[in-house]
Length: 366
Image (cartoon, rainbow, N blue to C red; front, side):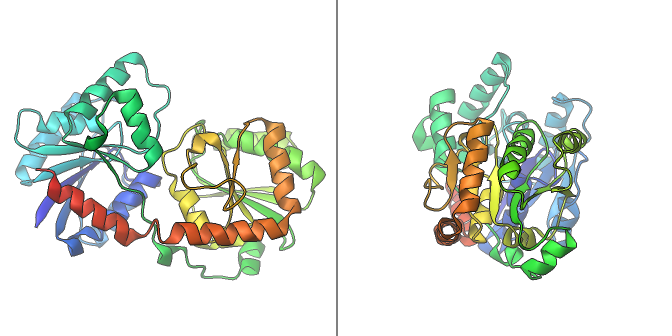
């Protein structure tokens, strides 16, 4: 059984962390023995979940944003664990995987899961060097692959595109739509918009709130659920109050019942500055809930505009809010888009397909 070390910066709630969990808990059934190396002590909830499934997790203390000592500590630990291959899961983890393997026979796989933002010239040079030092680079979408080729000059033949896998069982609703809405203070007759994600600048949740405030003036029977935590939560709550929409906007925090929430919503909205292949978009579509996305969400190979969702071609508040109103006013189109979203996502993003492709990549990298 090939032993693969999985390197990741933290094990808190997040898209990459969820994908790592789904992969590691299933790969042993496919002949791969994973050990997780977390480059910080931010490990909840996934450390406990991984260990409950018998997956070993190693953690490293962090003293600064880029801590060279962690690279050497990782190098020592993977040697002790007799790792056959190292796989780093996020762009900021890649340099540590390089440090842990440089000068050895051990191979490593680097990853890019979204277009990086706000990278200074030095970081870009480091990224390019590390990507080109890896034996293989994993991208989770065609758009990310193209970005790797254009931005970092990586040969396309060295890039493996493996799309995210979703656990459909986890998304099955446990309660009725009416029950879920009642529990969260939203009338059944309201048009419900759902956001799931980290409340930070990249997700542009403030843009969504402002767009919603315009739309609700025209269509008062609307509500918005904001699911997630992050550094902007208090600022966003204050913004909702200043926009006088706080009675219609519910900040639900981190939730374990996201399947119920997707099924209770009429529309999923994401205004991100940049993304790779967002789990939340795929999950929403698999639940039959259509999506309204920014161009920065990088889902043009997933969403066909007007068929299984909508992509806002001009990210202004007027344009986004008018799209919202148009979707509210056309329930027949919305229903058709939801069905098309369900059909287009379920087979393409199956867990088994992702596992098969990961195993193939791990076995081929020598």
